[in-house]
Structure formats: C-alpha cells, structure tokens
Image (tube, rainbow, N blue to C red; front, side, top):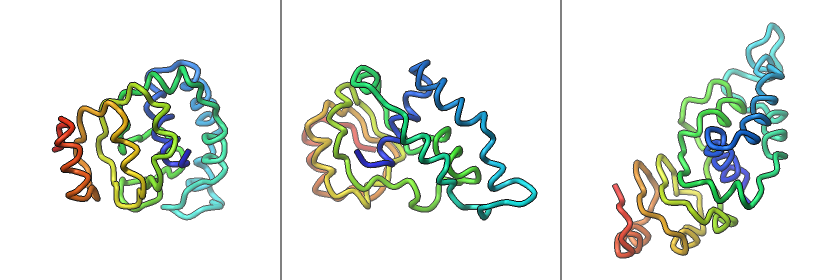
Length: 155
C-alpha cells in the first residue's frame, strides 16, 4: 500500500478506532516535534520528521479496521501534522502515488481534498462503492466521466 494512502487511512481511523488512536497518541506524546521546534532543531521549519513517519507507517491496520473507513480526506491533519508540524496543505509531501490496496477499504464511500495528479491507478477506485468525490484536483476528464456515469457525485 502506498505510504501516503496508509497515512490517510490512519487519519480516518484516528477518530473511529480507539486502538489506532491510542497508538498515534503514543507517538505524539514523544514530542518529536521538538526536532523542528526545539532549541537545536534537527530539521527545518517545513521539513518532514522521518522518525515519526516511520513509526506511523509501522502501525498495523487489520482488515476489520480497514472496513471502518468510509472517508479518505486529504485534510488528514493528525498524521500529516505529526510528520510535518508546520504542514499547510500545500506541496506534494503527502500525494498518493498509487491506490493499490484501497480495495481492502470495502466501505469507502467518500473522497475529499485529494490530489489525484500523481496517482497512476485511479481505476482501482472504480471497483469500490464510492458515492462522492468532493474538493479534488488532478482528476482527468475521462476518469471524472467514468465516476459520473457510475452515479458518483463529483463536485
């Protein structure tokens, strides 16, 4: 699974799964943002903190947890802000390059604030029961037409 897709999944589960929330909160409690904000910072103001990203990506998500996901949002602030404390929603640090593995999110219904520009396999989403795609960019006219023809609300 694409690392950034997994980060979106973790962000979605943060509010819906107490075990995932507990694991993410434990990472947050390490105060690794001091690697950016501290007196002797290791990273620059808009850098990602790879130590946090590595820990987040090491979290195991079970099939049952993946089934809870109904929304993937590019405004996945908890995981993104842990990795990049000064994340402003700009840049491509969290761009999804592949939707491989998305099929395990069998109850996924909505996508919002996603940039499809870097994803080479958007067609994987056609197999899911997506109902709405809101506030997006980088979706080709051809892909948009397929979604609309499938009855997906694209706005």
